[in-house]
Length: 541
Image 1 (cartoon, rainbow, N blue to C red):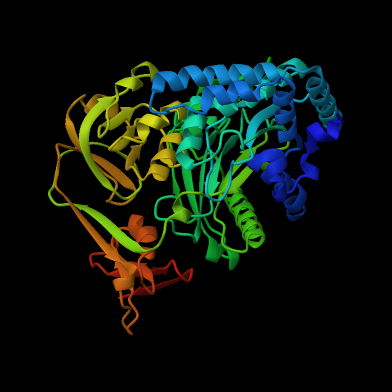
Image 2: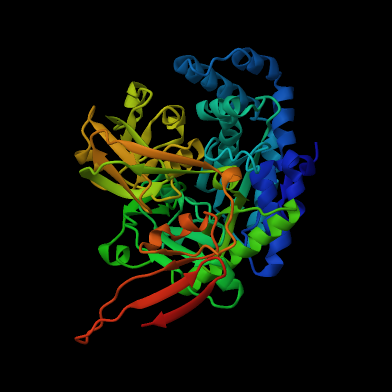
């Protein structure tokens, strides 16, 4: 078999090649091939094809063994799922040990080193043929490895990526979403590893992740590698940029929120990564300058426009970025369709509100807009996740992909660490479960077994209240709403509700507040900001 059947360079791949190299690699190829000319930087790399995976399993006579393990598997039997998934991974790992595959990967790796002029550390990431699709993200289901150095370590990482097609969570996810285990194949992406030890990285969305408001770019960032943001082990900085005003040439950062950025994940000299503490002086400042935020926002807007044109309809995007230590440039290292908020059917408006006041035990960033009541279950580590029961409020420092089967039966989720793009937030959003992330002190404040009310219906800040509070739910079908002839303009006293309110039927959203001057007289200053048109104007009385 020739190398071309095993390996495709990003420059040879386009978005239509999902069946060949999986969703993640197809998107990387699209970014590299189509958007580099627009000033969007993407590291060089190559994909090991899905054909290599299938041929390896065929040569090892592995298909019948895998069918025997998985065809009759009941995913609700957690012990059986764990046992059979481990056996399936072992079969794939052994099947992909061929010298032919090793030689093809080594040849491509040597070419990558030649292009960069020396030893290259790489990121090795799984890319399934059913991954990063508009209706299924498969986020976090398969393995990835960072700062891989040398041919032997690369081949090992690739084999472990191939085997991760049968992680417990991936098997469970495919069953839940109606995917055939044997119609999904795995490709592996090998990309030049950016060094961000003294820089930053993160995730951005071309919509507001909570309300679904599409006129903003939402950017999160922290020092070092972005895995800490995804894993929810730190609280990232957050930024919003308004797309209509950006396109009109008024390029400013709409809002910024300083995160804790407690840890920095850095590369280790002999391979792998580690976390180190971030000094207070660095934690006290933003990880990005305004000009860098605006550069990322511009890249995100161009990516969304390109993918929307390719799809023939609006395509909100979920994008990973990183700033390289060596050349101090911003790079895009992944782009996928956003598959949760943008897919919500706009058939009705549903609102939740507390019908009585309560005592706040903890607060953090709200994920979703719902309210849930249940008993607290504090989970310290994976050994105790099996104790979780349906309808409980999951309280943890952070969550991991292996916890997803239990997160599905939670009434709500509360984590001590994390931002709106961490694992707990992404899964909660996909499941429609209210979550409060980055709730520092929740571990001590929430007692096991105690009834609490988790509210994400009060703006950007989510609250955990003592006791089971009454909840008022209102649902209005869009078909029952008749728009009056008069324009409906809304004024808010709380700007945190602007994006959510903009999603209601209206003709404009503004902000009205009292302000006092230093003089003996007070004046009422009325600011009006139309987030629908992007215009700004001020009137004073």
